[in-house]
Length: 416
Image (tube, one colour):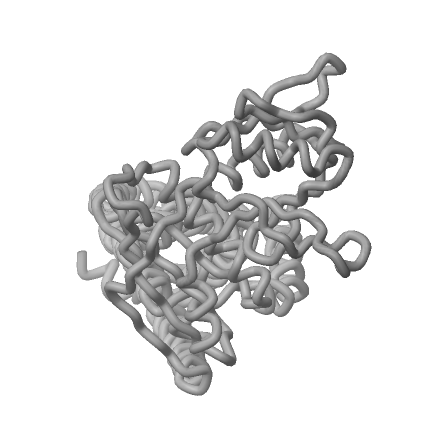
């Protein structure tokens, strides 16, 4: 009785949790541009100045700048990733004015130091005193002052120019802008003749490092050239999503009917494990902030297929053991033990292939591989261990006493 109660409570609790949380989880899943509409661009980056070096750091900082620009434009959760030594891939979903966004994204980041011109309102600075290329490349760094507060040390290329500016603006603000966004407006506290300046203020260590990185980025503006672009209309993306969801629902119903009709009560448990598997995968998408794309859905479906295959192998082995004349409990134990190695071998080899795809692939290939790996791990947990535990619990409770509850006829046992 205790085993039966444990089984019932486990199933009811999990069913309740899945029923209550699934709508909220589905709303939080981030959709890729192929399902939501938007565009994807692959940029090739090169330094603005002839002969300048393109470093990994400058490429990464440019990618971060693109992401900040996309966020500032109000776009929905942009994805910006670096590829190789000189490429940046940008994906933005849910865009209404693609032409304007593309124009803004392509412009190189412009770092300027500005002062207040005559007629400027308080806190407004329109006169450009210095630009990013006036600073020594990569020289901005974070240090600590005498009070252990973070300060940003910067170096300029033209010491005389910097000395003239600080002399003229002594006691006044010299604001720092990235594009048209004001980052800081420190006060010039001394005439600086050595080409080095300290920017201090109410900075945390993280914000000081971010400002230093921005200044370094401004000193290394990269020219971006489009090498590849793909645009998906919002209507087409919604159509793809609707068709995919519809196909998934129909396919899932067919699978569940097949499992229950073929394997009876163990098929019901296997179907429940598949539903739990799907729910866990959706939860992983939300928690890990994965983006769902068409290749990701393909990996999702492939993983479900492998999970179904694992259940079929296990249940067939159990039925073979029953046909040999073993008891139901012995058949369940032996069938699970024999099928375990076969299923694990298939899963491990698939994980290895997916890991290779993730290591050497790019873009959608990486996404497909990562989701497939997650799928297989969840399948092992839900369909090998959890489903086996539920079945064993039910058999030991005495609820499964007849071979026909497993889809095995008495005549098949007698014949052997």
